[in-house]
Image (cartoon, rainbow, N blue to C red):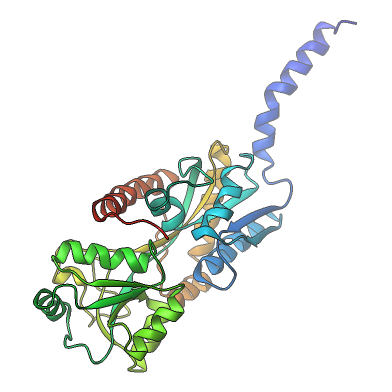
Length: 321
């Protein structure tokens, strides 16, 4: 049986228009935002903000699914190996898309197998110390560390975590040596800092500042390039160690090959939501900053981060546990 010329033309036109129509109606069904860490942390909170933004703007439900384990590798692999159809997004972290590839021999996903959507947050850390430490500023800390090479120690939430790499960068740039004491999470590390078992820690603003205000630890500096508007009297580490900067970030990513129209639409939706007074206030309470950017700008940022931290990890011979 053969098709008439008109029928054949109609079929060809329908096939040609199929992809365009698929893009125009996105999303036509519910989707997911994968958070590659357990519920309750900052990554989870930001994932829920993004999912709510997508849900409200598209009238399709985007739910958050927490898939923790292996420094974020398990949840990241699910998105990295999924169809590129725009119905599965990932909240990426420095571990999943910058440092894991240098710290671990094998990963169940390829960090290059993702398309950037938008930066969700950037956040500095605070350099805090036990009150008994004989240093009340970054300059005094550098002098003390140089006078006692390798004797001072710092706690972290684990090998390869931002709380580990930020002080490793500090040590390299300041020309000092301090001992690393890794913990299984930031909570135990903070507990031992307060107890005096470790002397220093780099921790996020949200959890470190209450301990500073309670005078359980003292604040020496911030890891951002410029002083924080919320802490204008606290100097940056860069004021003593020029060029120093260590920021954590969270970003929304999709499987590589996702339609550009879908990525652009998701970018615009999240940006509009995160710039509302309600979400801006919530982000400020978390101690993070939303800096809107394009997918191309996020891609360039990730490349810069990989050069910076990948080089540091290689130079210092760091490996994940």
